[in-house]
Length: 193
Figure 1 (cartoon, helix red, strand yellow):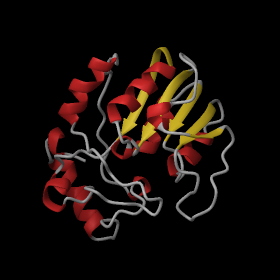
Figure 2 (spheres, helix red, strand yellow):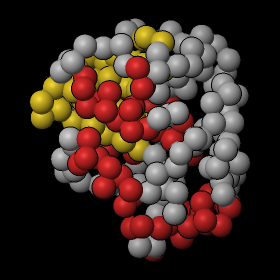
Figure 3 (tube, one colour):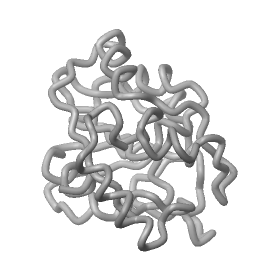
């Protein structure tokens, strides 16, 4: 299962998509009709250079979330945590706007994955929008950090490399993609992406 299918399968109710500007994940979430979806991003243009025009879109930083406390059933941080200037503050703000027993869904590169160890593929990469990777997390680091903020970790689900979640990656070219996916399938959890 890829990350978009995993997110769609687990989302419910009122959802905040933080870091939604490029829209790949956001557009897919919007297809699930029983959701009331909101979007928050510092960037107001998509990957084509067009203005973001989602319903319920607010411009703002994850670290300064403009929403009130206990508003959302789910918060999605799809490939955004690594772009945050202060990921701890971003996670604290997501926790603040979640209802009690709310659900946080994160997808983020794994700093110690085999691809990051061998290529440094995510370090300091600046996108067309000017926002690059600031701090790349590890699975172990997130397992320690999230409970300290107040989250209960229900599951960690590792998806294989897919182009849908990697707009702009310099590793998106076929056959390297196929090799990357094949290698990832046989690695221990801590070395996966």
